[in-house]
Length: 415
RNA sequence: GUGGGUGUAGCCCAGAGGACUAAGGCGUCAGGUUGUGGCCCUGAAGAUCGAGGGUUCAAAUCCCUCCACCCACCCCA
Image 1: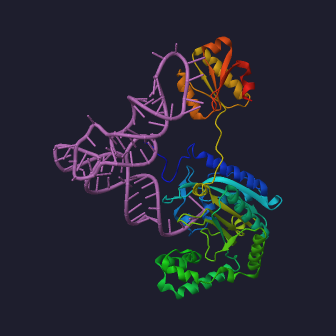
Image 2: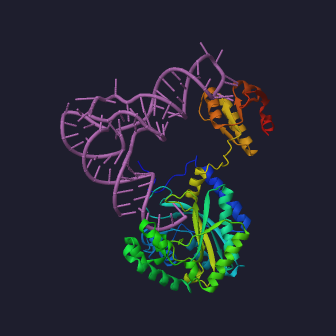
Image 3: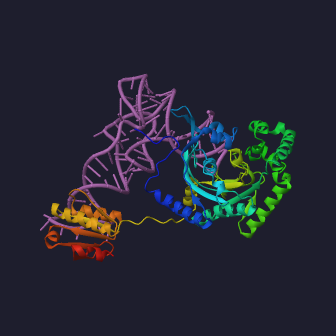
């Protein structure tokens, strides 16, 4: 028997209301901020990701679904959302549009990982990207958008973590300070951190090993090493967030797993931290567009994991809208009645009324049972008597009353 | 990639000191007299007991190998 590939799932009908709900909130919130939707291909040339996300990151080094197409080109199933949108921004000359350009997407992303709670090989992200503006007010607005999204969904127990990791001017100096500090403690570091020290020093701060905790806690902070421009940017951002009443937590140990981030980074976590807890994250990536061949363009954005969001919607018992059943069920008895039923169903649908009917020759009892399970308000019964008289019996399912009406008047009774 | 746990009908699960024709609940379907749902009653369908191999007269129950899922690490959404 075939089954869905490891780490992938079918989103079954009973799950769909959650997805519809999330999608409706996305549509509403992005509208409020003037974001326009963009859909880009599910796969891209591999180089786009290795160049933007960065070689040396886990995402690129061991998690990408990469394959050669029949022309021998290396292609990769999208492992994150930002790179494609940046590529599209450059390719379509969006730098010539009024800036900032604000785009959002809902898309599957693929990572070859070992699946576990809240982690899949295919998951879905809602993301926003804003190009062409470096004012920290736009950082505040983007964070405000993400925050409003979570709040509109009804999630209460979440935290916003914030940090600034500087720019290409000030980060190298900070990394040096960080490495110098860690070298003093090198004998007490876990094996992973010893590697990180040389390979990816920022990630040292993110280590969860008990033994590394107090070292990381006292490590030099990136916010203390910012150049004046970055420091000013970060100060203003915080001022704006306060003005917007967005409760944030400065987390000096927050770093992100993709190389392109500069200055502002943020992450949203549930209060009760599990292991796979991040609900979403993002930040500024002022150098990325240029790096991908565009002209220097400040930009920022975020990606939020829809599966994890739904997990938390369930955890917090958020009430979501349930889809309404069809308004009517048509039960029939006999061949002649079936024709009338078919015709009536078509007429009602033409008038915008949802109708379900059984096929075959089932007993009336069975048909009513089905109507009951569906939860329809009315069942329309057409038997031999009704066929002769040109009528239908209209049964109200909630109070079990029924009346006989002419076939061509059924519609007006349902309205 | 590493470590631990689990794997019985569509779903939840009993059975695990070898003998099962594998039990129950939910759900599904059909009936409970002639054309009427929800409750109730009755019945039926539905399981090569994750897959493959081995031990044995006999294995869902013991052993091995795979696979999948769950949990943790790594990393992330």
